[in-house]
Every structure is written in structure tokens, then in C-alpha cells.
Image (tube, rainbow, N blue to C red):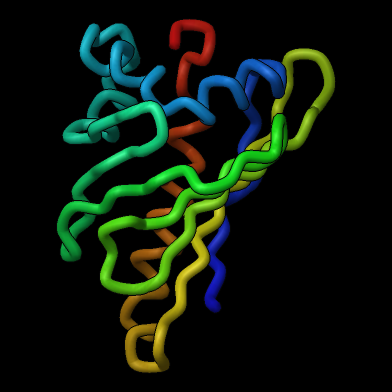
Length: 144
């Protein structure tokens, strides 16, 4: 299984707040619909659909991807699998308590790729997980 990780991102909210929001994706729905988020975050979240236990988005060139929450370890880990992805895929969000109002986040994609796909997919998956980490770090967790 191949693993691709984001950089360690700093979030200026306590770990319990971050975990409670990330473990319930539906919290993001109102934020996106109300437009009460920075333009750069809204642009990155365009076309994303949320439910209480899943996130759906378009990922070129694969098409629509639905990530379903399958595991939660409060307050440090959320694991999602791709329900509609052609290969076995997991997205893992790891949270670390930075003390007070600081949380560290690392996103990870775990994918089973054959040797031919590995060469083609490494860059897009690496870039995608880094963007995911950055997007999650920019969210206004107090307004979700």
C-alpha cells in the first residue's frame, strides 16, 4: 500500500473543536451554502457535497469520489474510505494536541496501486493530499 502525506499543518483551534467538526462533515454544508468563508477556501470546496458521514467531490480525471467515514478515534483520528473509487483508497486525518488553542493536522492517502499506476498517480495523489491538509487548516472551525 502506497502512502502519501500532507505537511504538518497548524490549526489555531483546540483539538476537541477540530475533531468534533471534522468527524461530522455535515457541519461544512451550511458554511459553504452561506458563503461565510474566505474566497480561497470556498473556491477549493466548490462542488463538494456533505452528509453526516461522507464527503463527495469531483477529482479529475477519475470523476466523482465519495469518502465515507469508517473509523473514528476521538480526538486524534478520522479514517475515510472511497466508496466509489476504482482502487482501494483511504483518507486519514491525524490530529495532534498542540496545547491550548493549537492543533496539528496531517492528512494521509493510503492507496493500493499496481506498479504501472504508481508512476502515473504519485504526483497527483501527493499534490491532492497536500491541498487537502492546507484546506483543512484554513477552515474557520468556530463558524462551523
